[in-house]
Length: 115
Image 1 (cartoon, rainbow, N blue to C red):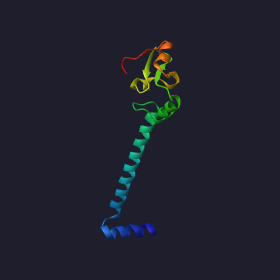
Image 2 (cartoon, one colour):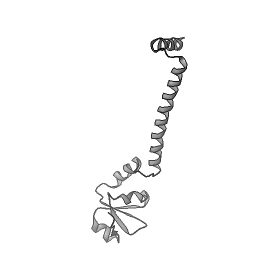
Image 3 (cartoon, helix red, strand yellow):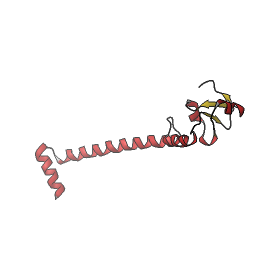
Image 4 (spheres, one colour):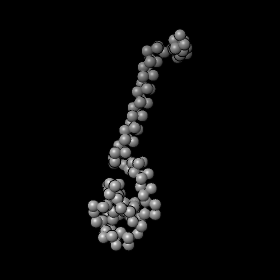
């Protein structure tokens, strides 16, 4: 009875039929759900290593890069500045961090010309 009274009150104020109210509620629920799913899928893409830097990578990098200025891959011979965009392509488990250029070069790595 309460829901029926509520709809009757809305109907008397706005002169809207109950079917229009239900359609409006369905549209609002679908819009909010679509927005939420879109945000969720963006978050999942970031965790899987999508095009943008994920929150998880930022947290891991912030723990590993305390006073670290340079990064290299275990499988390569080139090192990069910590802010270089190429660093995001190196798998986290393959990253090696250096404090200075001297440390990186003494380990046999060469400075990247891109960054």
